[in-house]
Length: 326
Image 1 (cartoon, one colour):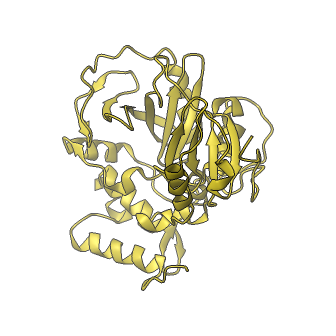
Image 2 (cartoon, helix red, strand yellow; image 1 turned 45 degrees about the horizontal axis):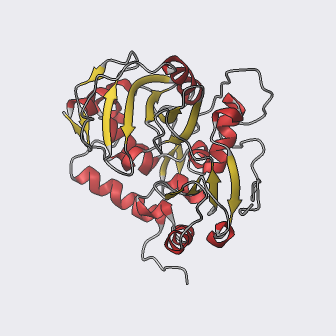
Image 3 (cartoon, helix red, strand yellow; image 1 turned 135 degrees about the vertical axis):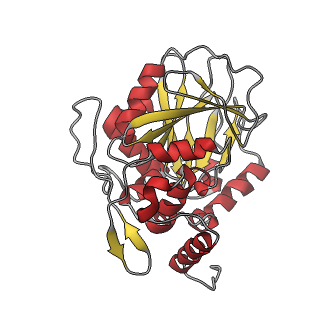
């Protein structure tokens, strides 16, 4: 039975926006130049409806977006798509199972193993999760509730998952790189500039024991990928994996931590806010506020594509491949 809610999604967005304003948070285009990075993320989440968000929040549509711009070889191999967890019961690893319609819903299946009953029940519970309501992210309202089996990526040292490079872009300009390690064991994060110098700051998690990492061999390629994917979009975080001979796009993120990231020192929040110069294009929408269309697309090569941020080519209600168990 569907859960009954006392307030509509739009009413909750409005309530949170008013509450934040009453608590003194600047959430107005008139104050755009004074707003921090988190202020701008919160404003965009609560007041902006860009059709591109619904592409980035649906993993299969995001894959189409990346494939059209960079090529499908720069994505993890898609092994299967299913509507029920039971479709994956007989499928042997290695692979990673994830939900199409949210973040953090992921489980790993190692060599020659199958999903346990607990893992199957957990995956089935993902399909009942309306992720849009969790942190009031409108983009997830259009995401299809499906399960995906993807290639299990390994780092050059055999680690799973490998280090995750999250590149912050403003209109295609990379300004910061978060490097995540041990995400499902001992999660550590460090932040670096595009020239690979260390930013003396922390975000939620502890720093790695060593921060004197050598410059990744594929850093220029990662910067190029992020620039092309983020161009024409006021802010986009491009999540990449470097696998030696490959750079792979994991996700495209519009609203990290729903705009509640805690930086130490807080001056980094203000500094990132100043770098975010492009404002949303104002269009009035009754009961919601501003909406915007990011527009624009760019490609690394001259692949033919009629896709736009609002209509990715090749999108469909039940993408292939399948079936889930092979």
